[in-house]
Amino acid sequence: MLEKIREGSQGVAAKIILGAVILSFALTGVYSYLGTNSEMLAAEVNGEEITRYDLDQAFQNEQARMRAQLGEMFDSLSADPTYMAGLRQSVLDRLIAERLIDQKVADLGLRVSDDQIQQAIVAMPEFQVDGKFDNARYQAVLRQNNLSGVQLRDMLRRDMSRQQLVVGLLGSEFVTDAEAQALTALQQQTRDLRYLLVSQADYNAGIEVSDSEISDFYQANQARFATPEEVSVEYVELAVSDLAGDVSVTDEEAKAFYDSQANAYQQPERRLAAHMLFEGDDAQARAEAALARVRAGEAFAAVAAEASDDTFTAENGGELDWMTPGQMEPAFDAALFALQEGETSDVIKTEYGYQIVNAKKIEAATQRPFDEVKASIIATLQADKAQTEFYGLQQKLADVSFQVPDSLVETAEAVGGEVKTTEMFSRNNAPAPMDNPRALAAAFSDSVLLDGMNSEVVQIDNGHILVLRVKAHQAAGTETLEQVKERIRAQLVTEKASDKAMTEAAAIEAAWQAGTEPTDVIAVAGVGRFGQPDLDPTLVQSVFTMAKPVDGSVFSHFRLPSGDIAIVALDKVTDGSAEAELVGALKGRLAQQMGEADYRSLIDSLRADAEILYLDRAEANPVQ
Image 1 (spheres, one colour):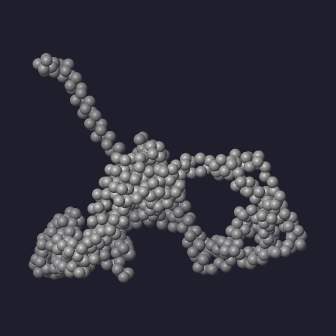
Image 2 (image 1 turned 30 degrees about the vertical axis):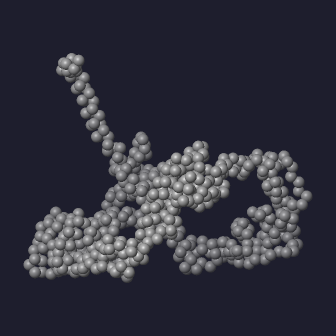
Image 3 (image 1 turned 90 degrees about the horizontal axis):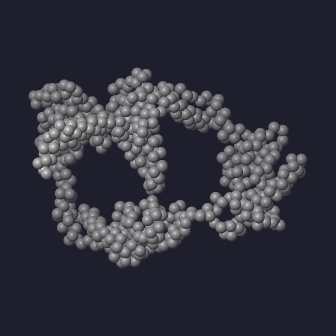
């Protein structure tokens, strides 16, 4: 059989078929290669690409910003796929807007000089100490953010170019003094009034509400009587903080740990470094020439001030900062810590360019005494022991809750804990620790509610976990008519009484306007637009809708949220003073609002004239 197969494979037909298969694979590979680029794009803006990597990075940064701002609330929001899709789209739209601005900047030929960038860097508070630019601070911040001076300059050049466009096009917005003064006077306006309250409670007596009225109200307002889904849960929790309180550490253990980790309690050797940096095509040749000058006897600081491309450190003889091993990139670090005090390295190649390193000063390592670090060692050992115990119990918690899925009693016994129980709660009023988004999601998950089994292990925080099961469940629904009947009756009585009070108030207002002022009238002078503590906000808001008195008082009446009726006589309107400070602040706010509106209009205009392809979905969606 094998011989026949071998002979058949040498035939013409077999070779044709084999060739076709090879060709199909080749074409598939080429297609895949050619198609990779579009698959990696999120959008194209007038032919300029925004990669999915750029979008992913911006999306991650936005999530981090929102998580820092909203805390655990963002965890709840992020569980909604629709919300996260909308957030990702908004980030992509922002990237597109930035790209449109950059393209407009290029079209207008806007530029930012090196001197402007240097002035901006010197003025940045991030690089200042006591209000002055500090080169050591500058270098430290760059290292912390994994940036080079060139990268920072490029970022600033782009942002400052954008700012030129924004300021040039939108900075023309202004608010006149007359406009600001008029609006300030209006905001500061006060009103003098007299008012009388007609209480709806005085008209409750004798009001009848029929069963049919109650039924009709119930049928017309079903949404008011919706009840949320609720659960009561049992849970067993495990926390490192609870375990740490029962952990003891002896002095002997602490001393043994100190002896075994002596290096950890050393103040490491540190060196005050200086350097020269050379960038560009001729960087290596210039670096060798500068090194030759130092080797010939010139002071390192003098050569650095004249020759180094790092203009900020050059002003201080190339001095950087005190450094410990591992703080800089490997090549720089190796060169610095191979030197004796005062020595200068050979030219080295780093990611920033060509550098020459000088060890200006050296401080040897020192050992911290045991008594000084004893307390921290004990705390560390307690935490370590508690963490070790926690990991062991965590596995028991997971194993037993899975092996006995219809009860938490055995789980609690296995970890030395207790079964705790909550009252009924909804998603909006969960008690701790069920108010954690992950615990809340587990409590209302189908697997827990429908199967009636223990949940998987839920991580509340680092070193804090729990397992839960539902004890009682109440599905979302609507309260029955019998349950809400008396509440509806009371509300209808209040509404009818309020209508009666409104009729009475209209009569009192008419008599008052005719000259018969009622008793118990309350007079209030100088009421501001933003109210005062002893007045109902709705009353104040309504008073400021009344016309300005011209000849005598102006009268009106209003229903308040309580159902009471307020009868008002507006006696006087006093315009506020347009103080210079208030006018200036208002002008700034109005100009900012107008500028933001103009910026949105600019982006809308650029988008309308642009060819934008959205590629962050299954199919490209062209937008003209």
